[in-house]
Amino acid sequence: MELSVQNEKRLRIISVQSTRIDAAVAVRFKDAMRARIADAPEQVVLDLTQVEFIDSSGLGAIVATMKALGAHHKMALAGFTPMVERVFHLTRMDTVFDMFPTLDAAKAALGASGHVQNSRG
Image (cartoon, rainbow, N blue to C red; front, side):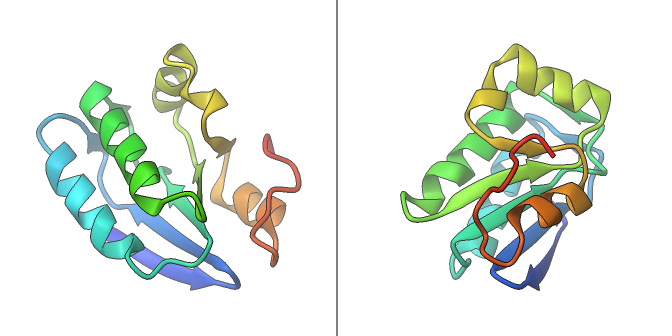
């Protein structure tokens, strides 16, 4: 699973470089994410802009990543295709994560402080 990492102010932005997060790649995704959050600042943004499909295994891997971050860290999600956004709404995971329609919206809302100013961007 290919992920790119960018540190910006007090944010770590992890961008998924794949069109799918499903059962076939969920374990690799989870392992790759754990390696990239090990020394993360307080706020992590997972950029899903390129992801066109996610299933329950992929969703579970994202939730596992959030739990692995621990209580002193927050994970926001950004960049949704309609299909991926629908999965988050249907499973009510949109109530668990701060979600932003684009990466730019997430960066603007989280700002330099890393705290959400407007969670719906």
